[in-house]
Figure (cartoon, rainbow, N blue to C red):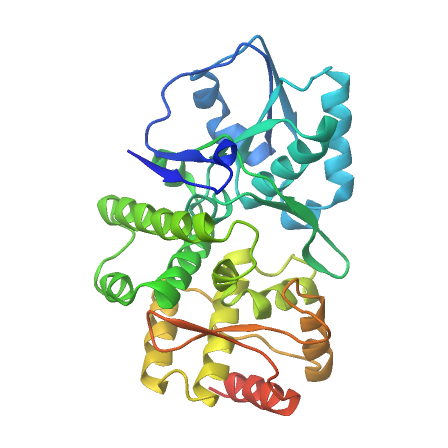
Length: 348
């Protein structure tokens, strides 16, 4: 099956294919960007599906701490060495880190060449690979250097997920829960009663999430409005990732904690019932996701919000659930209330 991502500019529209990766044939040069873990598990299988004029493999270190301009520079140097041209194509073969860096590299190499996404983690299949966000981290925060650059296609193969460690799988579930809480109450209710460890349920959830994101991206490609809602839990989660140097938590784990912190703020603002917040927290805990973080310095944590991409004129927008299945974008929240809410969440 496939799902259309319809962007206003027709040349940017593309399809997300689910379990339809058979044979890809290219008449030009192709470079696959991957990491040692993914290549060791799945590269041979992928190579059986690709035919190209010339095919190169570029391997970069595994981990969020390598998602930076140094790694992108390494990728660009390899592309120049292999003499890729404007008709060449990149393939992102890995999780969200690989996808973001490959898309960013494609967007700036020779002022832009095509790329496709073949995500190998649950998190990247349900979220990161779709929508055209690319970029890298810097010392100030996550994804602060990047572009909006749509892929030519996305191929989501659930067979790649069978080798995921338990933590990696759960990290993807956090993104699934995020979408259900903000956009679809019935989907959230379904998640409470269906285990994603069952393949049939997992395929249903992946399809549902991609359809939600397709609709959002089609309405708002460059995050001028509704697309910002996909950052529910991320404003808090990005601070946690940056404070821990991207080494303690997987992205989805930080988002899980961020969801709980956002929910507490929503409860304090009387947007979310305490019972609803507990239901969301319980669902996260069902997948053994972390729900607490020890904030060492509340003022420092608060100031870090202003490195978030949604901050403007020293104001920060918070994406908060307005009951399960809907959302509210809130700004101008008093600092004391935010810090009090953070302390309340830690004491839960």
